[in-house]
Image (cartoon, rainbow, N blue to C red; front, top):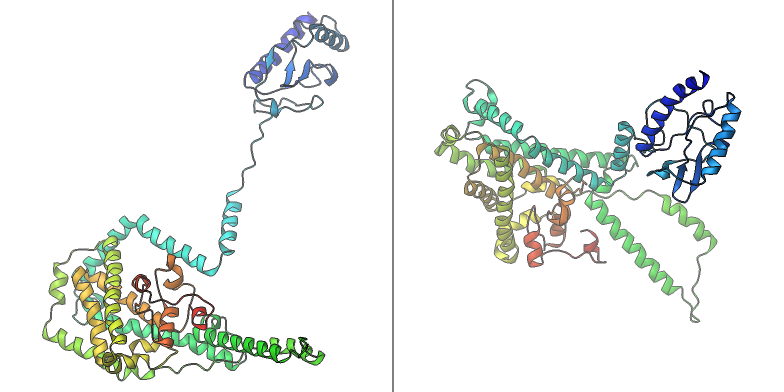
Length: 473
């Protein structure tokens, strides 16, 4: 009866062992049920662990005699293997004991999963470790990608917005949008916003210089960068001249005295001398603004046309707006390149048309509107012709005016911020304030305003050499 009870108790263990062996894993029975580890029927081979068979349960009533009999049986049967395990790399040594608590795989060494918040924290850490230009490029790429991802929702919002602008009779914004003066009024207010924004930046740096504090935006201002590079090159030339003058007839070089060596760290630690800023062109509201507004105002009063055209247009799509704006900027830039090049190459045009714009070598944002009457007509005319040739949507024309006024102001702002197109646009396809400041300082190269593919094609660019001009590009 006792032997029958032992057989019944060992039957579930045998079934469980068979299931685990078929799955390819090694399972060792608990010590409390079978033999000590020294007498377990496992043997070590080159391919892993193998298990010898025990044909019958022990006949003795004591556990020690059963263990001894199992040991003797295993010795007699030698190294005959019944099962060969596939995943022998997941087994442990013979002395380890695994308790069977559930049907889970006991030796699965799956890698520990990283929590989602740790993954997100690692990604944010990597992004923050990038330089400023790389961060803004990621932001620009994310914005452009979001337009494609959310295009259906953007198109639906544009349909609703266009219906409101086209049909709302009482609201102020739709009424202004349908007025003939809308486009050039948008351009004026956009210029006012962009120009005075850069004026506040210049003003903040000037106040910091007056207090003897280095403003964090000062490192982006091109005039300070240019003057610092000139001063550095001047000091380098003086040091070279002193080293040559200090060379004796026998070839020995005189070394600085101890007093001079003590004075060098104090000189290096002194803050840089504040740069004398170029004066702002504050008279543009008196002279250039009437020259810009008067022809457009007369044209709109003579030929009212905008309301009828808006009634005939349907709602735009996100792709249509992006196409109109980007192609409009490309066409305007190409037309301006041709006119700008001839204004510099023909002395009569430069003297009586374009020289006013080159009054200051260190330009400020207000210099964008420092134009002669003929130059204003040419500049505005090229922009209108480009949009009319593309048959741009009225909403695209409004967005175009906001963007082009920013790009024109940034071109003359005197700063090289890392979020500007000259850094964000890859492969050097966009020009900006650095190239246009070179153009104003030297009077050549960089005849395009926004792009530089045509300038590169004809060689109208400065090489990044060891010269002072090359260091500013």
